[in-house]
Image (cartoon, rainbow, N blue to C red; front, top):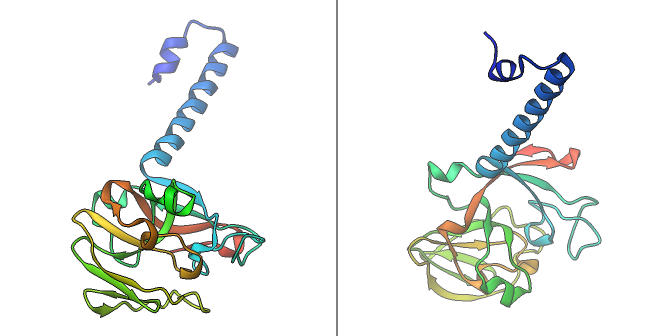
Length: 200
């Protein structure tokens, strides 16, 4: 059975048919890659030390520990089937207040700390959610900081995000909660540099 391209180009010279077949193949491959990037998986680079040591940024950046910034993959499809969970590292679009408070906005990568309807606070760097201390083994090496935050209730449909490196992170402490529609996807893999390749 001949494919549609063969049927449409059947009367053309062989060289033309081969060229058109290759062009259709390349365009199709590009379309598939773009569709996957838009709806399934998207790559991101870690530009700052806000997630050290979980995710590295490149020296000589302030607080960065690696020669190369980690490059991660985010699953854009996962939250169509389940709700975001506490402790997940997530890619999201910041609210407008991030630009005002931190001088940077756009796409951030942080850890989900508090869920809609919960009340969170900080005491000398320790996070409490609904009056229970949040155990955070991913924070090491003096990165906890000494920050204190008053109790705040997370609005419906909103989430609280903090960096793992609290001493170098601009996050929900400064610019508040993130609405559900701003969440892009969950980080599930580091694909660069080679010595950091891992699935999370």
